[in-house]
Length: 440
RNA sequence: GCCCCCAUCGACUAGCGGCCUAGGUCACGGCCCUUUCAAGGCCGUAGCGCGGGUUCGAAUCCCGCUGGGGGCACCA
Image (cartoon, rainbow, N blue to C red):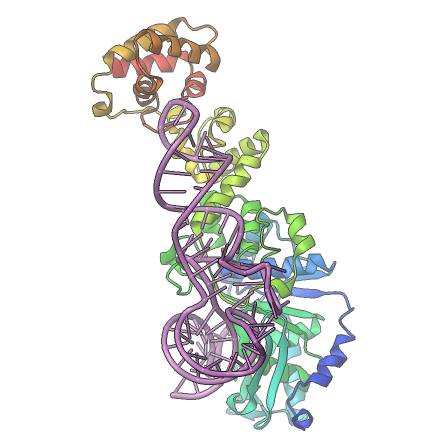
């Protein structure tokens, strides 16, 4: 009965669409050109990308602009840089909503001619059915049904001739042959509108999948005050793309009850929309840190070294890159983010000013250590360790007691990489300088 | 106000009627290891929002409530 009503997408029609399912998958990522990719949006893009790759389909990148500002080009560039950094590649050229301006206008005129839309004070408004209901089967949420009386006639073309989002977006989905629209849950209420537009256009609506939003720790929408929220924030903090991808994939999706660490390839192989959680998730920075640490520790040393060099270069450090590379093994098990490197290893690159209060009463050990270290040959971690352990034993000091003052004197901190490796890297000359400075 | 969506440990989640005295990961606590910090090993604390149904049996199905989120633009 109500299946016969104008705007309905009912079960039988859905069945007809099932036969089209074998078509290859084509999805799109559709950021606004604000320049900064929000981490929630990035997660949605990731799902699109994983879904497309999983099914051997295509993933398009469409910038949803409606304005012609110059900043759009820059923002678009920045978005592409960010996605490349993450390792999410799109297929085909980047497109802009603006490119379809004339086509949208023509389609709007056509809808008016066909009676599906009408002029209203210079704008063009789409006529929504005023009885019956609209339903669709969301790939994540299941069946969603809305009473048509709650949907108002929609402006599709502004009086200045520009299409609105709810018109341009479905038109482009249609023109681009999009088979699956995977987007944020904030679009749920737009979907019935777009389905009506599409049907009036004579197009078969794609499948829809609404993925939950990401909230901050307080359960509210993620915003600046929650810390890092743009992809660039995470990049600056020193997260590895692989770790971020793994972590983000697990926000709202899971493979099974046990698997946590998954490579890009494994994610692609295993991803499916029907295992996407319908409920919103909260970003847990601590777990992200942990996971990033896992990836840092798993990195071959030369790759970690290069990652550090690249990161420090990007962040504007002018530290000796060869020394940075040599420091990589000392920090691999100590840092969770590349951004922790500077504080942790600063003593290798800059002078230190130890807190004298921490060195109270340790003059003798510092002097004795300097004496021994003057002789150690070669000045390498192992002989250094042997010499200092011998010294501690002779002074009847526990290693803990004996080494901590040396650490403070040489690294300027009570927390540092392994002491002996640090001394080696610093070099005899600077070690002796710092020991005598602190011991006098 | 109206419409829609959501609801398992603090967080991410497994669970799709009996395998659950609810499993895993992070975090947290304890112990071990130990030159600091980490890393690692072992152990542990902690959860099905509430109320009704359905059923021999409910975290799982249905209804209501409560709570949270999103939307109701000539924004996207």
